[in-house]
Amino acid sequence: MPSLLEAEGISRKYRVGDNDLEVLRDVDLTVEAGEVVAVVGPSGVGKSTLLHILGGLDRPSSGTLRISQTDVFSLSDSDLAQFRNESIGFVFQFHHLLSDFTAVENVMLPLMIQGRSRTDANRAASEMLERVGLGERRDHLPSELSGGESQRVAVIRALVTHPQLVLADEPSGNLDAGRSAELHDLIWHLAEEFHQTFVIATHDMALAERADRVVQMSKGWIVEDLN
Image 1 (cartoon, rainbow, N blue to C red):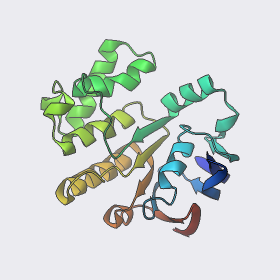
Image 2: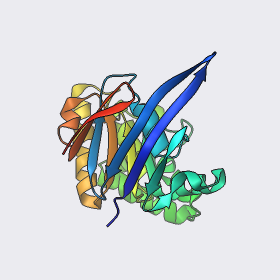
Image 3: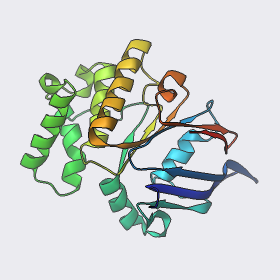
Image 4: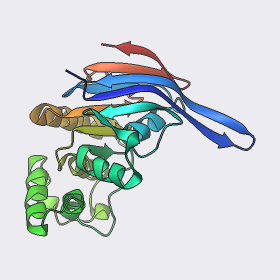
């Protein structure tokens, strides 16, 4: 059976003045359904760029990406946007919640983009907020939430559509140790409950050590893949 995600020969170059800056170099990566994979390495080695490409937010200079056998970069920009919305969830270091939307409205947004009714989206978002202990905070704006609460909202916003794949870029990087541990527990609880596939870029080894697999990056290469 094919893997959920199959990336082959992914390279990414950026033009800087008269020179090409090679951020990713011939990266190969496979991820199985239900697997939690941690991509580790210091800042600047290409972790975020890799996640942006795996999520279809950026196109590689060369290489191929298949998710559930869909050739992602053969899609037009509009089809790729639809595929992202239906198949991929994103969690970033800074939660990127919309400041004028309440917690429940932020979680509703991906569902409404998919065409779900406001009533249906509100019900599903409210259930997810209750599931992570934020039911009483549903009508609060991001400015009224703690950093840990905001990041929990961001996680369930990524999960509310039940995507095939969730990509998390330093999800606890902006939290203190206690809040980081709470977020890590939440991610693993939800991964198990929903049989959810995660690829998590992190420099936090406490988070990485809980993953099913750790992928080490250095200078744009995958230098070690620990099963």
